[in-house]
Amino acid sequence: MLEILEQSKDANIAIKLSGLITEDDYRKVLPALENRIKGLLQFRLLFDWEDLEGWEEEANATKFGIHFIHRWRCERFAIITDDPARAEDIQNLRGILPKNAELQVFPPSERSEAWSWLIGE
Image (tube, rainbow, N blue to C red; front, side):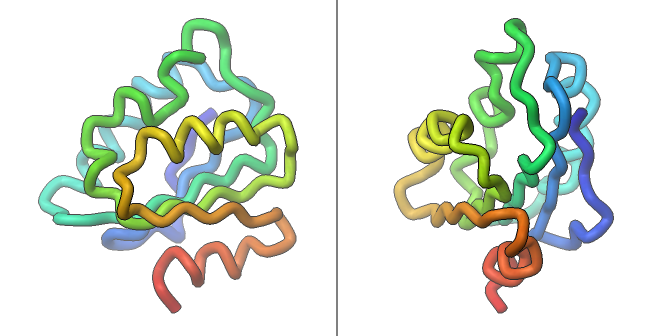
């Protein structure tokens, strides 16, 4: 399941990924995300992967960012996880973000620090 979290405000967007992600999950969330970033020159994303099990086969190629055409406007990207199995996914995200985008990984115990870093506090 993909869910845009209530703490999202303005150019700061938090998304919870949990369970096994499907293509249908993407189809439900991407329009809302596109609508949120419409008109923004830059934005910041936080992905909470604490309860993420992975991606179904048909969703595997998407991995949320591959088809996200506005990724070049992402200036900061925070990921919440302490699952070593996500290391390859983190590297893949690094590979599709622009070179000037910052990416930081935080353990679930540092959730508030992740949000503070994302919004620049």
